[in-house]
Amino acid sequence: KNNFLSNAINISNNIINQKVKEGMIVVDATVGNGNDTLKLAQKVGESGKVYGFDIQKLAIDNTTDLLNKNRFYNRVSLIHDSHANISNYIRDKIDFAIFNLGYLPKGDHSIITKPDSTIEAIKSILSFLHINGILIVVSYYGHKGGIKEKNEIENYLTILNQKKFTVLKMNFLNQINNPPIIFCIEKIS
Ligand code: SAM
Image (cartoon, rainbow, N blue to C red; front, side, top):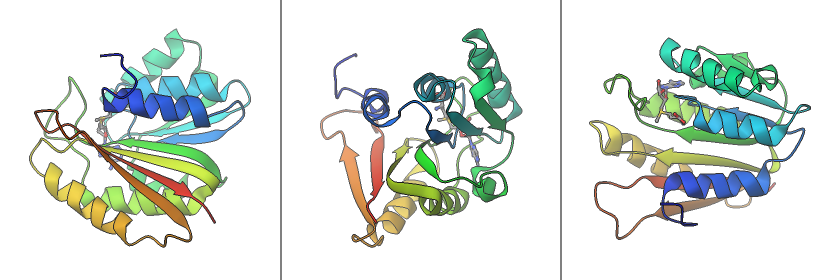
């Protein structure tokens, strides 16, 4: 499944590869097992910074191990708190952010992202984004409560001012089993 468009991970990686450069300040709002955090840490290099959030200690621990193994821990701040509280931790403008919604793979499937905190976090991140900065929200919605979260995010993103943001929705039309929806937001002014 390594085709250019075949899944949400490939698509978000393609965007990260295009947009995330040495020295940037970026956010992984849902670190989980740390795959995106690792990718981002690699791209921002020694002079960049990744802020990673998760409410589960297991996710923070798994990601710490992955970063240490790859010797990238020094450029990452992992924060064991909800992404809704992001403004307590970040003062700088940011260049890029990503959310992977839903539950921790191989973890407790009942601990999931929730519409109110997700939207609160999206709002904060949009206010911190540089012009030309990008936010990606990958919405996995096959689980209980997932459709409600997806719909609330979509409603919120739909009313963003088009003079300030370009908002894109990517949808796998011919895949079975609730393939994720990818929302992409670019700040344009
Ligand atoms: N990208 C991750 C990876 O590579 O493994 C997967 C992320 S997983 C789909 C979603 C994560 O969001 C879970 O680890 C969950 O604990 C976390 N989460 C749920 N609610 C959260 C919140 N309010 N703030 C931060 N993280 C949250």
